[in-house]
Image 1 (cartoon, helix red, strand yellow):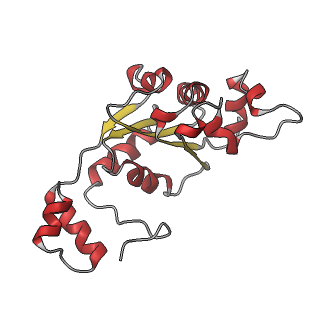
Image 2 (cartoon, helix red, strand yellow):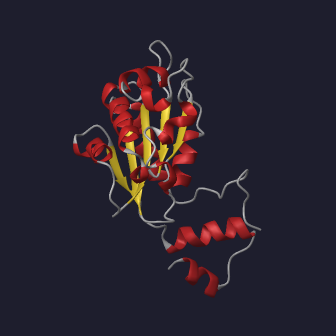
Length: 196
């Protein structure tokens, strides 16, 4: 039986990556971009990190193709209601939006951006500003080899974030994962198929 969304798949074979990201998020940089191919486990790794206890809140932002044409669309659910000003008008000042998301005096939040390659330009600019200003820890995932907004590339290019290229699990880890999920070791054909 496959794990449900309430009980995610166990995290296997990612101890080194977890330690590296934890250390980086606690350091002065406080920003990590987890890159990799489709299905390699970027979101699962980020979810594990976001679930860890912390002083600040977690702001989860799920970018998508459908929101890419909407300025600050990925952040829409997190933007404050501002009298008669719509989020599009509020986007005129990313500083004001950053202050609303990470108010001075509050514990810095963790801004977790899933599929950062799909962010609209203003949302990408906001992520860059949050990381550059140290207002929040930033944890972003993106699919390697796909185009992404310049502001997202600047995170690692300008040294504001550590980029981690996540590799597929090895055969041993795939076998352990299948054993934990299935409750018994997989047959050879299943194990081989899952390792491709």
